[in-house]
Length: 297
Image 1 (cartoon, rainbow, N blue to C red):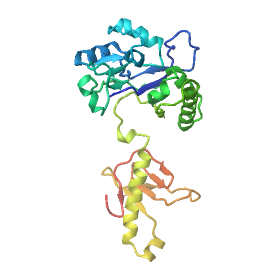
Image 2 (image 1 turned 135 degrees about the vertical axis):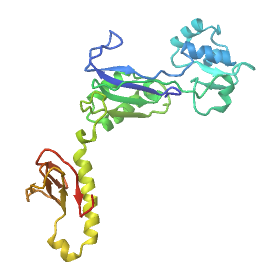
Image 3 (image 1 turned 180 degrees about the horizontal axis):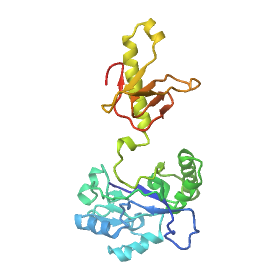
C-alpha cells in the first residue's frame, strides 16, 4: 500500500536494465510503487476533476506560460526539474497549498483539491532472484536513479552500510545543486531465501525445529528444577523420555560431555533419540513420537 512520493524498489538478479544505455549490473532495479505526483497524467487529471489546478512556481508567478493542458505543461515541468508541479487552489490563482504530491496522509487544507489519502495497492511475489528491498523518501530519488540505488546497495558490505552510503551520496548531490536538502530517509532489507517454493512448511520439516524443541525443553527443565531440592539437582540431570505405543524396548543416546551447556539424554521406544543442549538438538535416531519432561508431557 503506497501513499505519497516515497518509493519501494527491489534489486532482482537476471533482469536486463530498463534503460539500454545503463551498464549491465549483477542486480537490476525494479520499481514496485509509483510516486503520487502531478507529473503522472492520471493523477493530474484526477486533481483537476476534484477542483485543483497544477502549476509550478514560475507558472504561479506568471513568468512561465501555463496551458492548463497536461501534454503542454508536462514539457515545461520536465525542462525545469528544479521547479516541480504543485497542487494549488484555483481562486485566487495559486494561493496554496502548493503540494508537490497528489496523495498524502494529512495535509488537510489540500483535501478539497484532490489530494487524497487513498493508497494504491501493489503485489510482488518474492522469488529467489530478488535479493534486496529498498524503501526511501524522495530525498534519495531526487538525484539518484533506481538503478544507481540498487547498484550501491549491492556493493555495500551490509544493509546498514548501504543506508549510510546512500544518504551520504544523496546529501552530497543535493548540496551540489541546491542550498538545502530534502528529507533523506532509506530502509534496506537483504533477503535470505531458503529454497521454499511457496508451499506451506510442515513444522516437523521446518529448519527451526531444533530451536523450537530446545526452547520447549529448556522451559520444562526450568519448571522441573524449581520443584527439585538442591540435593536432588546435584544428582539429577534433566531427562526427557519419549514413549511409543509400538513397543517397550528402549535405546538411548548421550551427548558428548565436551559440548557446552545443559543437556538432556533422550530415551525413546524403538524410534528416535534427541540430545538437546544450549546450542541445538542432535537427532540420533530417526523418528520422534512424543516428549515427556519431569513427568509432564
